Image (tube, rainbow, N blue to C red; front, side, top):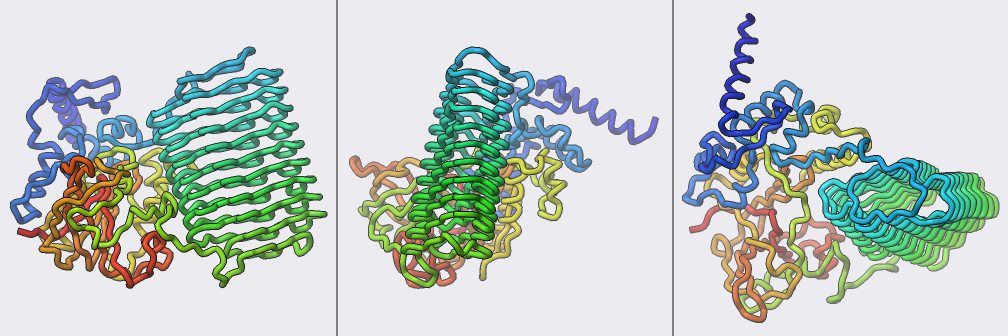
Length: 638
């Protein structure tokens, strides 16, 4: 027998015999679930190895903090060895489910829906407290009636549903999506050929996917060839983070298909919508975008061949669109092109705190009788190859003017530039009352991987196909978007004077902190989240290193399958440890860590700190708390 084959057989025989006494092995030989019978820490576990590494690199008497140790990999030694071997052989993707489960990763593995398909039923249905179903040809050719989805896929990690050919060719059939997929981590819904050839009826999306971390919605050929089938999106994807909606061939060839977006994407973070060939060749479409992307942070929406490219008598209204948002950009390409007798109204459009960027190209080109009015429209807009007839600009805020600038004086700015997030150094004094911002970590819970595994995983944009293969990320999927965004941020050029690195293991984080600050370092974070979003009192305050100007390394989470931190050097800061007291009882409820940036001269004029506090770059210092699961490293003080 070949020597290499003998060694492999011996390896797996040893693995089997060892695990027989300590673990339970499922039918998949790589699905390892550690028994709870072991009470003593294994000296070869990642946690034990990390503790030893800490002692060799951190040359002081400070033990490794619990909040760092708790993030280390939960893998047992043989699990770690096995997955390291699979990563080395580029075969980890074949065992991804076991790997994600054992290593506490976020892999967005979609539940199998083929056995969960709900087909057509001749009666009304109330889908309350349902989870992860596929609706195919449901409600087809129905006359009248209504189906409701309430508390659907609520508070689960991965909510996925398929509404394929739902309510097709129906007449007067209503659908209501109320409290759908709320508080889910990742939510995916596919509305393909939904309500095609439908007449009358109504689809209402109310409180749809609120507070979801990564929403992904696809409305493909939705309501195509429909006749007067109104749709309402109200409180849609509010308070979400980093999601995307795709409306392709929506209401194509439709007749009088009214659509209303009210409170769409309110206070969301980096949410984008793509409207491609929306309402194409439609007749009498009537769409209203009211309160769309309000209070959002950097929303990005693309309208491509929207609203009756070749359509007739369409009407679109953008009211308070992107109002009080932070930045943002919209692209209107071939909007209303070759349309007949259409009408578009932009009222109080894009009144952002920080000016966004909008592009209108071939807007209304080749149209007949198209009327467009811009009233109180915002800054930074480019019009190229735009129809020169039928367009009016009333109170248009032209580039270079001061119109639309907002001076904040104690009022609410918005969720993403909340005044309480930033404060001045003078607030860190005993007895001071202040509002604590929302410091609760909104990221999904994950663990670091052992460096032996991360060192063998591809992590680069030019190796994106390999990265996608490891995590089974399909093209244009949620996972692909997560991977691309994090890789881009990690590969971004550092700011002037900044040193940065993304780390996927605790060992890498230690190495980076030591490379910047030396081996005599301490890492700190705010103790807990008590007092978050409440008025608190400041107790005893201690300045790190005597309150002297110092350098620190700050680490913030990035969204990735395994725990990933973006760490960067922060020069010229002062770091404080402060008691947080209950205002009524004066008892200590938390220990907060605050960092004050003394030199802000390189910050942008539109930075949220200056919007909230006033002033500008280099004129004031800016302080903020270290939020839950973020951390700051400094040299040790004795």
